Length: 96
Image (cartoon, rainbow, N blue to C red):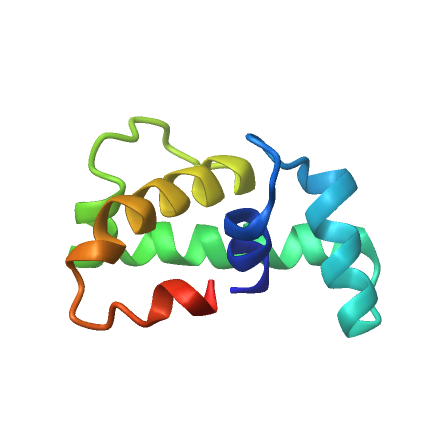
């Protein structure tokens, strides 16, 4: 969740995971950047294996067998950007 929030809040068009996001999360939790990368990759992989209805809705156009961390964050930020205004919890936009 932290990675997605940092990605959404970034003023860069495409924030760099290895230079912007991983180090920030690693510092916050006292971990190495490689641990952060690995943990995100494992979470994304687990999500792909489960193939929930929500996953299928969000990632239906992704044809790759394995989604990278960057692809995951990009697709999720696009999905949130397109759907945040339609959600009844509109106040969440201020929290992002």
